[in-house]
Length: 473
Image (cartoon, rainbow, N blue to C red):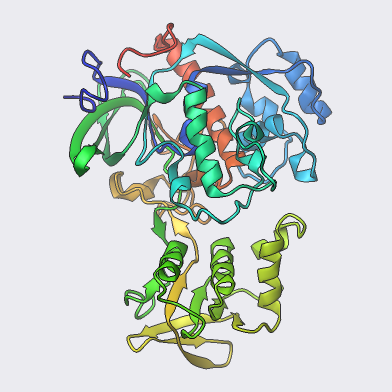
């Protein structure tokens, strides 16, 4: 049977899907929206603050942005993404956001059911991706409105919110509701785990026309039953995010049972009352936001903390230096703690871990000294990497440096800047953290680039569906 079990997908489906999206987080949801016939046009009642971009938009205001030259529109724009289409889409949705303005988007959305591209979105849980697994009480780093997807105002679904920032629970709820409000449910197959993506070849139909992808995996159904599936796709989009594999220190003792790599393990230890104010300190390794969240969590529970990080206190690359104090008071509190003496908290800048010992001791290396401490628990929070185990060689050959593993910061997937198609694999696309766009604000640009490319490509092949839905979903 070529697709998922018949209770999920009805009989009579063809064996080949034009597009399969792997990952149902905000990247996959936004792309599904754009592939479902929703088209962005210039809202002629608005004026974009960038006069050059506004003039370009007016030149072709009768056309949706997905039928325009994205390279031409993106030219000269600057923003906090290395991907020009991400900067373009962000400034259309949030003009001058980096200057502190909250201006209305200059786009209006219309649905053209003649422009629907049949597709499937495969995700491990319900739509929302990794947001379902995050700590519920922490606030997001981004403003709530920056987490929203096109066509549905975040504040409309989060009425009564007191903070401009949101909790992961609120964001995951927004994404689930978004899929329902926009009628995208038929494109989503939940609780699916992809185990293999392999390239097949069928003749010589052009640059990417001859490529076919076989996607294998299983769907977890009631009673934890695994139902295997196999389907074929002309195009595959990697939208899996970056939270699969915690980065390790690779030091002695890192596999000991008191060493963890997720902040959720701290929450679990606290809820089970394995830690209290009389416990030995918790060692937290890292100087990013996850480490800061762990420091806040431990200190709020009166747990003593040893905080180890490699950077200098005055390092301009510290994330805290880039956050406004008024909007992120809790992170600036952590930064102040890192710089000063605080009761029950000790920071060790420019230190690294040498080893962990089975007698619950850790050895730290400073500039000119070795220090040993008795600890109760270790949290190594130095980032995460994507897990592309289902690709040949874990997808390493797709990176900007094929000799190194894929890393969102150091070695993202190498893509064509305006289509997000992998330079090494026609018919394979990547978006979101896999191409360096870690913020929801910018990963939406990947959806614009991919949808624009596929609409043009499949229109030539006559693969668009005129009734607004496919005959196999």
